[in-house]
Amino acid sequence: MIELKNVTKKYGNFIAINNMNFKIEKGEIVGFLGQNGAGKTTTMKLITGIIDPTDGEIFINNEKLSTKCKKNIGYMPENIPLYQDLTVKEFINFIAELKCVKKDERKNEVEKLIKDLRLESVKDKLIKNISRGYKQRVSLAGALVGNPEILILDEPTVGLDPKQVIEIRNLIKSLRKSHTVLLSSHILSEVTQMCQKVIIIDKGEIIAIDTPQNLEAKINKNCIIVNIEDPSNNIKNVIKDVPEISQINFKKDIDKNTKQYEIFVKDEHDIRKKLFKILPKHNITIVELKTSETSLEEAFINLINSERGNEDVGNNKKGI
Image (cartoon, rainbow, N blue to C red; front, side, top):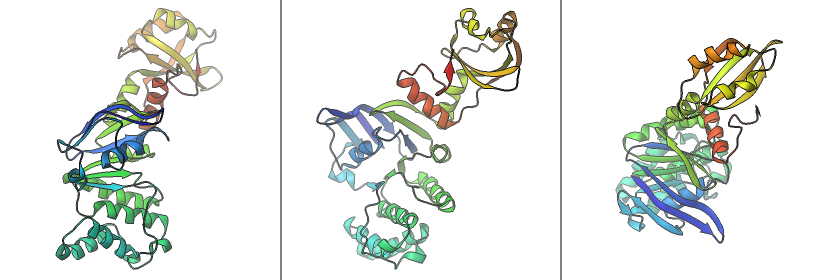
């Protein structure tokens, strides 16, 4: 279990992490999402104890973060810090020594990690002579040495080819039974497939914590897509008659006479029946009306833009 309570990290006057609070339960795989510079890596370094918070507390398995707690954490940094002049097998064995894996267990553990991460073909090669994809797997092996309860993985699939991504993804999903995993990723589809929960941060602050499915549903519930024939361009007047609407965005031309709009709704009102009554009164013909099918990526972008006070929640679309 990982818990952050009112955690802040400052570098001089710059606030990298601002009053962050979240809890990850034992056995969960949680995705950590945010744009570059949002504070993901800083938060991970705080959890692993590499850097200390300016304010607040971090708890691992209900104990305040300490040297003892750190033994239960495996960390895979994004920048792959490996000893280039060691072979793959030598490096994993060296990490096992650093983590005080018992000597009589060390050989079996190293061989198991080499097998699980499909490193057999490069185990005797110098790390400097293997591809980035293999280096990524060696770094993950280092995090798994000692079978830590908690794994902190910063961009674990960067540099891997599609087949390797699937292999690592399946491996991470298999860890759910015996490990708690926090992983960052820019590949949102991966988070959907691997993670039970998502934490989205922006500028060092949490803006959403939920399941991938609920994040998508929240955006979908608040957006209706309509294809309409509106020869007099009366759509702009509909907001006056339907106060539940927060904004209407032009999306695209379907054909010469038909246009598509996004209608954003305040809170969680269902206004579909109301639109079927109101739009014809404005000489607008409804060709199609449906709720939006938003991907996690669109939900992520919309949440970021919405938090920043961007009035155009639809992102890069003309508002009315």
